[in-house]
Image (cartoon, rainbow over all chains, first blue to last red; front, top):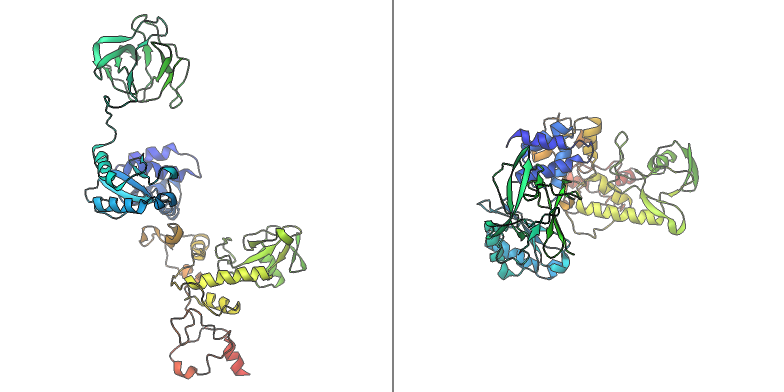
Length: 278
Length: 225
C-alpha cells in the first residue's frame, strides 16, 4: 500500500462535487476494498469530512470495507431469479465454498455476495463471477464454474473457439499481401508489417486469426504509446481514415482478401478493432 | 412578504420562511420531531405533514421543508392530515416506544392500541444529533452510515472521533433518548394512562420508587380539582 497511488487517483478528479464516488471506485478497483487509512487520506485531501466519506462508503453495496477475495461471485436473488431457484444456487455456492454470503474464503480466493437484481431477469438464475455473467445456472454446474474461475477465464482456446478464424490481409496502398509464411504466430502464417515508434523502426508480426491479440515484436514499445504502421513492401504508412472510438488513436486499415477492410487501433495495449465486410 | 391562507386565516410571512414557521406564527400547533430552530430543515420524521392545495389536487407535504408560496391554501389539521399523522405516530411508536416525546404525541393523537409488531429500536433516524453536531457544534463527529434497515447514526469505523468534544449536544436534542413513562406495565409501549383520563397516580403509593415524567400530568391536574 503506497500513498503515491492514491495521490494519482486524487489528481485525476478535480470536480468539486461528485468526485468522491469516482475516487472511492478507483481505490476499490486498485485494492479490492476500501482500507481505513486510505479513507482517512481521501477525506484529508479532498476536504470532505470523514463522516461523509464513511457514509458514502457504507451506503453503496459495491463498496467493501473488508478485504475481499481474488474472485468475486455475485449471485442474483432478485424476484425472477428467486422463483427460478436462486436460493438453492446460493446455498450450493455457500456449501462448496464453505462460507456464508458476504464472506470471503480463508484462502482469500473467493468472496460470495448476493445482489438484488442484475437486470438480466430473463436469464435467471444469474451468477456473475469476475465480471462474467452465467445464465440459467444449475446446481450441477457450480463446481465447474468455480474451477474455471480458479484457473482464470482469460485463457482462450484458439482451436475450439468459433469466433476465431484466419484472415489474409494486404496493404491498402500497394495491395501487396502482408502474409508471412516464414514466421508463424498462433500456429498460422503471420501478418508482417513495419512499425515506427519513437524514431525507431522494426518489424511486427500479428496473428492472422481474427479475435486473437497475439503478436511478436523485437522493438520495445512503451505501453499506451501510439505507433505508426508501415507497409514493408511499398514503405508507405497505412492511410488512416478513422480514429479509435475507445482511445482516439488512429485506426490502421488493412484490406481483406475476398473484400472488406479490417481496422485495428494503433495504440499499444488497446484491443479495439473493426471489421467491414463488403 | 408572502400572503397565504392557513386554516382559513390570511397570514403574511417573510419570503423564504417555511409553512411550519408560518403555521406556528399563527399559533397552530404542528407536531414535529426532527425540526429545531437553528438547525437546517431535514424533513425526516414526516410528523409535520400539512395539506396544501384544493380539491383533487390537494396533497400532503412536510411543512418544515416546504417554502411558503403566494396564495397557497394550507390546512394543518384536516381529517387527511390527522389520519396521516396518526399512522406515522403509530409506526414511530412501534419502532421506538421508549421515547417519552413519541408517547406523549401518540397519547395526544388518541392512539390507544398498538397495531404493529413491537420493536425496540433506540433511534428514529431524525438526524437532529447529526445536524446539531455539524451546524451548531462545528464538529461533524457523527453521521449517517449504511442504508435501508441497516442505516444507523454514529462515528466512522465505530471508534471515538477525534473531533468529538463530548459536548453532549447530540443527546440533548435527541427525541428518543428521553425515558418513557412506564407506569406499572413496563413492557407495554403505550402508557396512555393520562390521556385515557383514568388517573394513573391515584394508587401511586405503590410505586413510590418511580418517577412520573409527565408534565403536566393530566391525572394529577384532575386530582387537584
